Each structure stands twice: as structure tokens, then as C-alpha cells.
Amino acid sequence: MSGLRSTSATMPPNYSSRMYLQLAPDGISLLKFLLEAEDNLAYLSTVSPHSAVVKLVYAPGQEREVREFLETAHHQVTFHAVAIFRGVDGLRET
Image (cartoon, rainbow, N blue to C red; front, top):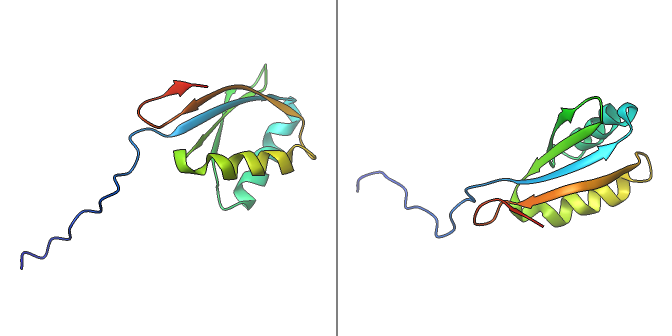
């Protein structure tokens, strides 16, 4: 036996999904805190601090969980989606 493990039949995605949100500038840190409390469901980075646009990066298979989280978070932080790019078979805007 060579000691190498066989690879799984399911390959990981080549791209992460991305969602851009615009919110009030004072809501950025709260949204980041809430995401961290959800076991880092998505990675948040600030695209533009002046217009308060943030980017959420998450696994393509986690979109349902991210959307559920955002529905709950919307009670504490006001935002709207600017663009969503799904990471399946390359980045495509939806």
C-alpha cells in the first residue's frame, strides 16, 4: 500500500460565492460581529467605507444559510443586496 488516500468523488468548488451589500457605515462592524458569532459563515470585507459597500465571501453550498442569516440580521442592521456572484462553474452574476 502506498499510503496515499484516495480522493473524494466530490471536488471542492473552484470559486467562492460573493454577495455585495450596501448598508449604513455604522452597521459594518455590527454585521461583521454577527457573522463571527455564526462561526464565520461568511468572510466580510469592506469594499468602500465611504459608500458602505461590503463583500461577503462564502462557499457556494452555503447560500441558503447565508440568506437565512441575512434575514435574521436585517432586524438589527439595515442593508440591501447590490450584486450576487455564484461560485459554481465560475463567477456568474445573478
